[in-house]
Length: 157
Image (spheres, rainbow, N blue to C red):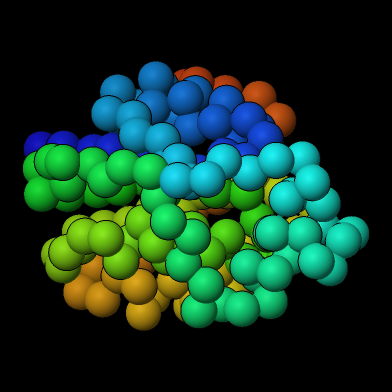
């Protein structure tokens, strides 16, 4: 039996709720990916082309610094990785997280929250950041996911 982790980035708290529900239903460990400099409401204003999030997403080589690394990543075989969809893909801080570890041989199962779009090319855009790992487009976890359904979904990985 493999050890599983739910890691997530949440700028507004929506993805945090989904990640906590998933971790609880599936019995995984939980790790929050925190930016070294927290996002403010102004940073997240997608209508402002000069906001921090807009600038980062225009430059896909942007790698926002994370506050801390997980010290025992080598213990996990499966990582459920959650984030909000920004501009049809994962925020670039997710690339920072992935590039902080050797993920060779691990399964990375994506889950996301979104106000309206799907995963788009998220897995494709993240693949270079986790070479040697199997990246799987999982599912959107909007609203309040059913814990029994989440537990059954996680069992397949």
